[in-house]
Amino acid sequence: MSDEDFSRKSIPWLRAGFDLEGYVGALAAWLVGILLGIVWSPLFWIGFLAAIVILFATRTAERTPPEAENLITAPTDGLVVSVGGATPPDELRLEGAGWTRVRISVGPTKTNGIHAPMDGAIDHVILETGDPAAFAAMKPDRPGLTVAFVSLESGSRSVGMRLATGGLGPRLEIANEAGDAVRLGRNIGTLRLGGWCDLYVPASVEVLPQPGQTLICSETVIGRFGSAAADLFESEETEEAPTPAPEPEEAAPEPEPIEAELVIDEEDELTLEELAGEDAASDKDEDEDVSEMFARLRKEAKKIQDDE
Image (cartoon, rainbow, N blue to C red; front, side, top):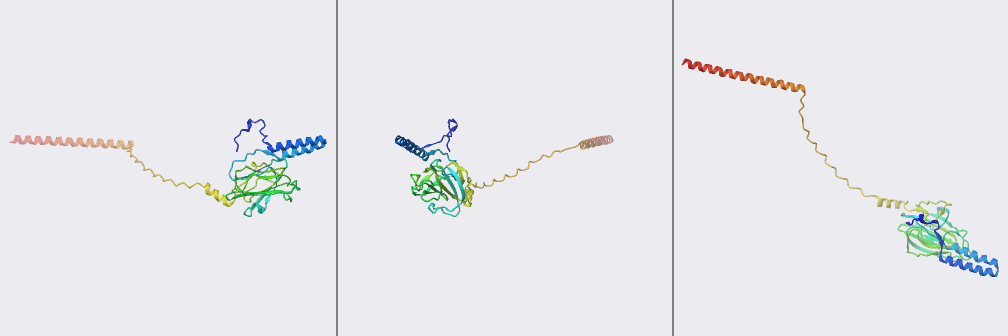
């Protein structure tokens, strides 16, 4: 996607123009008209109309494709005529039975670029020259039209295009060859003065545009790969993250020892004091008994001395 800031442009919508050959061809046709007008004035309009046709045939425009993976975008400007299942032409060499055809009508005033509808490589190109009698491509299957078959692939993904226009003049050109790698939205050819584009995509792709909607080449999203069963499994394998290894469980912390506190209520304290008092009294009584015993022994010893 372009990083250009269009807010600084005075006319940001002006992104279209003409090829150099368009300017040269229109100028040459206009000069021829002037010369014819000198001979006979009504002949001037022949050259003038030829100059207008040449400008329309060489009209170009800048395109900015979206940035996303597996997208399918519109290969040309135009109007969606129909969307439905169809069998691709044998020239496209598309394998498989399920395909959806998006038929696009390209008006003569639309830009002439053909852009790659997907990232990948061009598988093959087939160009069939038309009949000059078939100037206008009013119907896509009209005999004598100039037709090109272009297939693109990227791995298991592929799309095909059938391009058709009038047979008079260099109306349809493919600039790339088989094997060329292309990016999404890259210009790969030219479709001048309108025509038809049949885009074939796998049936598993959900087509977003509906009949009647206008497409802008390389910018309007047609659909996206990835809805098929195989693609879903592939995306699940690539996107599934590896299961992280279970973390080792932390050992339960050992319970902290709880210091037991001796709680003595008031009644217990009184009881202890009383017991302490009783013990002191008993000790006092014992002391008194011992002193009396010694006193009595002294008296008896003194008495014995006196008798002797």
